[in-house]
Image (cartoon, rainbow, N blue to C red):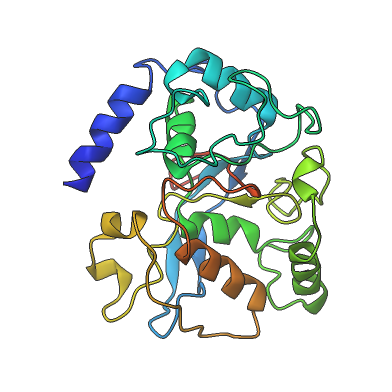
Length: 261
């Protein structure tokens, strides 16, 4: 039912031809596939991630403004409450003007999962899965997997304690191993299956993932509590719903590539 519902939403919300059918790999970085052990809980296991292209920067206020102009159904005054709560674009002055305190090249926030998903699909892209996002985000400037580095985790945790980072321009943080900026230190980011890992009982691979997109789930049992930064991300994802529009929550898009790249 949810899969069918999702297809209707996508058809209704997006043009048949993507907005950027040409040059859609511009400002994207290749993340080469591999295997890693994510923070799921007691059933954690090695996960394979295929190669993908990820936006170098999160989607900006200016880019999202153009999207709502081109797609009126996602304007502040017209977005259906079923797909976006009352906080959707709450700080915007009107349908086409974002808050004067926000820079055009700062990350867009206060958008729902439905809105972010539609934006990416209209670019011929999609939201990253939790595994893809975490795989790209575990890199620091020089290492593909920097999770065991104390200073790296301290940096991430210090960001969680810093306010108003969403007002900074994109590219304000470090360029990671893959050539991607702002995965940490700017805005939190939506993922395609944002809280599907926060389940109890059987492994998430054996459950209906779509049902997890619309309600919070059980608390995660961290398999590596020393990686507290990742624990906080999984806990945050498990506390939200797809229609929520949160002030410090933005997004970026990815594209699939051949696995032999």
